[in-house]
Length: 594
Image (cartoon, rainbow, N blue to C red):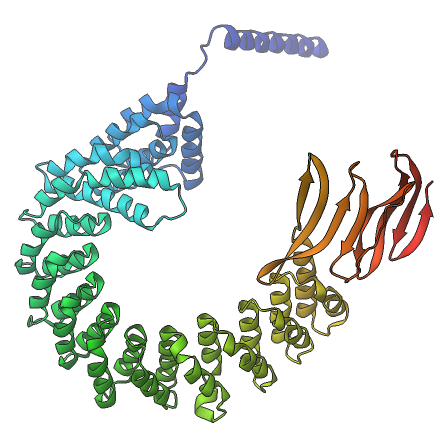
């Protein structure tokens, strides 16, 4: 009896389940994208945990354009936590229709919502520029500032980004320049925050038109506005500002003098040279410091004598270091080179290094001085041998080549390492033997550097020596470097040049990049039937390896490795019939196929 009741109950349950399933399929309507989007938007409230919120944002992004109408509605949701999440999703979707709703959302009274909207408009970059420009004429200063923030970040990205497509960046720059007239008008605002953001924007756009409107701000009542006006004039690099900036060099405030000296250096007008020379006697060391750097940027030789005199009388080591650096930008005469050479023995190591840097910037006139310093082995000069080698390498004068090779015998492994690096940059075939010897250096780092240089120049002659190191070097990191060097040399693709006569292949030349030029490895010559008649192996200096006979011809489908044949050697007659085919490995005949 009980079993019958249970069976009847099970049948009833199955029937109910079938009814529910049919009702669900046939009666209930399918959820639309807007309904799904609305449910996901409700999950953006702070009452949901972070994972659920992020999942909801991802799903809204996946729905994309069909959810836009609902997302636009959610921008005006009464819940601020939901409103601040929506701009991010709209920026991800990147539909042109999202711009205007986002610009409307900039008027939101909630700071976090407005900030999220600014970030979204920044992500949209070029598409948001033109719609934002009318906001610069809005009566509400807070809206102007928000628009300036967004445009400023877009301009910063445009000025810094050199990887992105140049044609797109050029279009964005042109759009930003259209904002210059309303920006000039904003310079007359009574709100300092508006003026500060406008000046930042103009610095990034770098359009010369606002210069005349910026100059009056040098006397603005607000201290920060004056400072930013000076910086902007320097960034615009326009000559009309020079005279007014020279006047501000005499301002009572030291920060104003510092900024003025910096901007005059950026403009690079030699009219500022004498006023900047006067600043070398300023009581504030920071003003003297900036004046010295700016004089180096002007490259006016009138500054050499004052800078040398200041170095002799100055006690501040920081000032003395920067004098050395700037002299390298200005001078190239024998008197200054001789003066700098004496500084190479200074007790301050940083001054010594800057002196070497100065001689390196002077270039070829300073090569002899640097070589003399490289030969000196006193304790003071030896500490800067590495910097001397780098300076000589940057100059690239060939007379420094042999002295740098001699440095490979130095007892200091760091100096030997610098010498190895220098040899690789000289692009001289004579560096091969010294680099090969450096592979036997006692220091791991020197051996690794030599391996890297040989791989970089793709010197295939070193393959045998590199293989030995890859197999037997005591240091595991050196072995790894050797293995990588072998791979790099092998990856270096050779170039094949084919020369034709009357439409027939006559010569095939195999090149490989070797130091500063392409070296010919092999030349292959063909007859009128385009059959190989001769190979000149120029690497192993073997004039002819294969010859064409009247009735038969040899063809190589292989390559020589360290003088040993590897691959197939085919012999066929003049009609193209294969007579014999051989397989060779490491110079030994392995198999004859025919």
